Image (cartoon, rainbow, N blue to C red):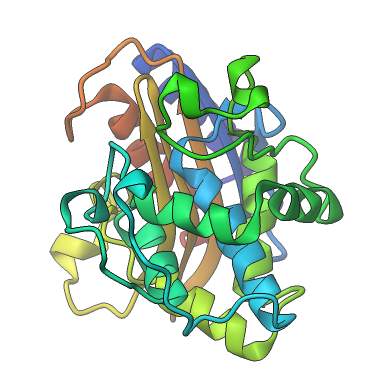
Length: 283
């Protein structure tokens, strides 16, 4: 498949689901010579839970600097518990997960309570400073997640929201994949966490290998994002046939159902299959 066909297919996917589709993707290793795919890659999207990727990066960088410890225990309080995805909201206050546990929960089940506990520990400024240092100028962590209006910070009350772009998310994914700015140990932790992602349905549903080649040693490291009208998936796919990093983002989808059959989910699945055919089909 040539790049022109990739863009043609992505255009059709956007027209079909009725929202906005942004994609940024790059080959890794022997696929790195293929032209990068950028479609509306600098478009601003509500970050939804993909904002947890920059948070993960900064948390690990600060752990390398000794400013936080992965083994430190952080008590869960009733005030910490917020709505949305995750499990900590339903557990008894007083539990003391480690900082590592919070990063794991934040990522693989997109736990909003765990995320806010991490933000409390590292601060929004550190995340936003890292975004600037990485050149991710379209990415901003405005504040903690799912807070009632009276507990939001001034930026949130002024209408600012957590936001990013496909190009920025790809930059973060590639940094985590390579361990850029991180120690070998922190890179290993990032990989361990991202490979355990549990929300992958829209990524694998149209790929050929889960059903036809169940023992094929492909792996996906990823992070999802989902709010009303928005569906995202960012990460990388690797295996013996090659590897590529991807950021697939949607917004303004008219389908507001929180369902596997949501049109945004299907658009992500079709975009992922298009990228798979392009990057892996060249092997």
